[in-house]
Amino acid sequence: MRLHTKLMLGICTLIILMGGIFEVIFINILENNLKQETGEKALSVAQTISLLPEIKQAFRTDHPSVIIQPIAERIRRQIDAEFIVIGDENETRLSHPNPDLIGKKMVGGDNAEVWDGKSIITESTGTLGPSIRGKSPIIANEKVIGVVSVGYLQDDIEKEVSSIQRKIVLIISFILIGGLLVAFFISFNIKKAILGLEPKEIAWMFQEKHAILESIHEGIIAIDVHGKITVVNETAHKILHIPKDVMLRGQKIEEVITHTHLLDVVSTARAEYDQEFMIDGEVFLASRIPILNGQGEIIGAVASLRNKSELSNLLQELSHVKAYAEGLRAQTHEYSNRLYTLLGLIQLGSYKEAMDFISKEVDVTQGFLHFLMKEVPDPIIAGFILGKVSLASELKIDFTIDRESSFKDIPSEIDRDLLVTIIGNLINNAFEAVRENEREEKRVSLFVTDLGEELIIEVEDNGKGMSSEVTELIFRNGFTTKSHQTNSGIGLSLVQEAIDGLGGYITFSTKEGEYTIFTVAIPKDRGGLNDGPSRYRSSDRRG
Image 1 (cartoon, one colour):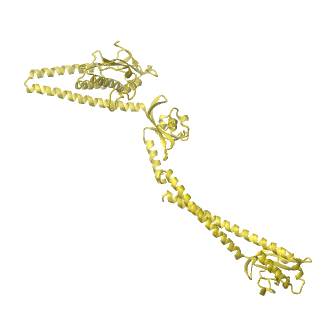
Image 2 (cartoon, one colour):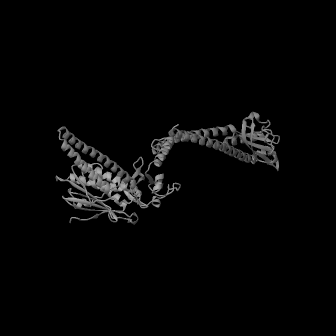
Image 3 (cartoon, rainbow, N blue to C red):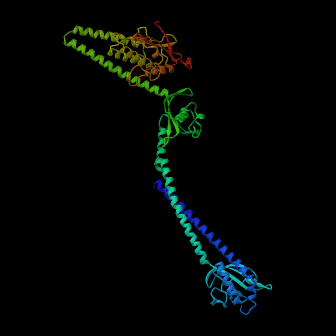
């Protein structure tokens, strides 16, 4: 059964039930009150008649009914009673609405207390039917000489009660109709408030939302317009270093975590995406958006928290995979060209030239590989550099490794992936710079050394250099001098993050239209890192 139908039936049933109970109680009280009032009225009239002097005097005559009957009938008509019966000490009627019954015995059997001098109210059945009676003794010379009985039929009371009951039923019917309208209005607004969903659907969606919140790796925190936490998932507990069994729901967001800016989002209704902020020394990216109801009103805000270092690691891994793939592709292309050259020499019968070509390639390759394996024994870094050499050959770039380079003494605690990120992005930027240069000679050189207390990485290119305006922005995430390129503007930002992660610093020297040199210094002693390394240092090596 749908919610709308349940509400309608529930409210109607409640109205009918309450109306029925009210009617039964009210009618019962009304009937008792009417009987009480009628009895008291009858008793009052009976007492008044019993005190009339002409009634008492009539008892001294030979034919008292001749005097009493007209008086009783006149009073009966005035008070609209069903009967007024006056009897003598033998309970013989001296008056009655039906004159034929005068002179006959009174019926009902309820005069015993009256002969004791008491005025009473009784319910009994007489010749006219069941009635409520008020009875009073007629006393003369301190002796009961007769009885006055004033009565109203119970049928008249029941008719009056039935008339009132019909009115009550009519009122309840109007209330029921009004209740139906109210039920329809309430159910309509409830359905509107819950977006037309049924309770089972809401329960299922709640369970689904809970499962989703607990399965994602992002921390989720939501607040209402008063800044109280309404939703927080397990990942958010871990990020905040708060045990899962600690109840955060209902607490003020400022008491749990500062600088979330969620209240700012509530007040401004502006979403914020990928904003950096710190929690216990860790950098997180937060996206904050306002929560709106069906009328477009702000009812809260929600924030998703992601560990920036995890995202950086993913970007680094992606960059490495891309670089390896590019290096393999370049090597394949380069060796294909050489094989075609060798094939052409053999087909022309130039066997000596073919042998010389093979010897030269072997000497160059073996010499470079021997140098690289000796001075850069780390296979990850050496393989990466070798891939860049092949790529440079394909791009017609003169890429050289300084023969004074040495990268043997790399402490084990220094992350090789971060070193590859630094070297790879600096070389990629240098390649881009020389390719945009109009000079025929495009040169890029790499120098690495582990001499001293720091690892030094230096990349130089003869590209177009950088203007002073560009140098102020190059380390900003998303900044790029290249137009209409996807995923550009993150290289030097990743370099800076990797350098910060290793506790080092970066310097650069550039001259617009001539050259750019980037130099990175990374301390070997990880225990001596500063808490806050410089973001970058600018130098002017060439003056």
